[in-house]
Length: 441
Image 1 (cartoon, rainbow, N blue to C red):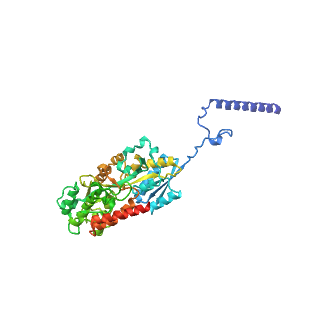
Image 2 (image 1 turned 180 degrees about the vertical axis):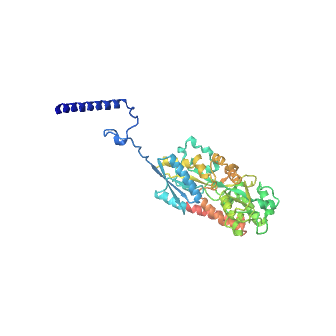
Image 3 (image 1 turned 135 degrees about the vertical axis):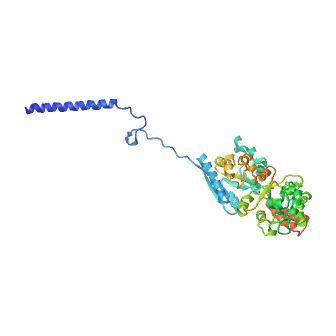
């Protein structure tokens, strides 16, 4: 009996095992399809190929040098550089601010073979560095979409030599007439002067002894170069020798002298205890001055109560004229990363980069399209400055300009103060300058 029960139990257990196996097989065959996504890493067979990983971008480092400026401007420049690097992940920009003696440091680095790939260069200094053959001509890098014609041409010309372009201007300022609206209204003057003769007459109405002058003058070459040019004068000849003592030059400069000594309607900042024209104007000691874009934020922060406006510089001798002060980005001729350097330089001076850089109005865009897009050409204060960009005289006159400027300034101020005649002062300055130029050759 026990044996029969045992056999029966064995049979029943075997039958259960068979049924369980069949049930498992049927369940597997009727389940939902396998997922199309890859299985989790923990279930991946050892023989499966590993997933692809994206290789890191190989970067080229481009060094950039510039001088220090306001914290706001530094923030803007860093924003432009960040935007560039986002669009160009294969380029790393290493930016260094040279806080003091900028040009001395740049020249030393260039001579020593440690110069930056890209750097700031003032138009005033450009001819000397171009002559030393340390700056890369940029014409061969330019593509049609860079739109060279969009730049204000006088500014672009400041960085050309022998038909080659050595830099593209990043920003600039011209001079415009800043005038005190309240002083004008009190004197019954309804509009700014359009000509120099009108300015001289208006100055008489606005002058009140030695406490308020009609016009604040700057007896230095950087502010008077366009004046002598308007009368056909030149500060130097084709060989780089000083020529500012010519009869034509003296005609223009005499106008400046006579307003101070004969009319007594102009003064220089130091005559009234001011450090520069913007301060003189802000203090109410001059009803009119010729200043640049830099005066706008200064007046807003230092003399916020002053009610003023701007206008184009009055025509002189029937000609439009003003000065332009501009800085370019240039490329080191010894750079080992010229293609990457050009990509950076062309972005900084291109429409997109320039728009960001000049958006706050600290500097004016050298591209006409950017000035229009930002509305600076129609701006109540900056419009006159932008208008002058098309006809301005750049502050540049060859590699001998530093010597010419020093000697001109040393003697012209004495003529302005009446210590010697203009003719004698300019002849002395010209003679000394040319001796120094010859000695340096």
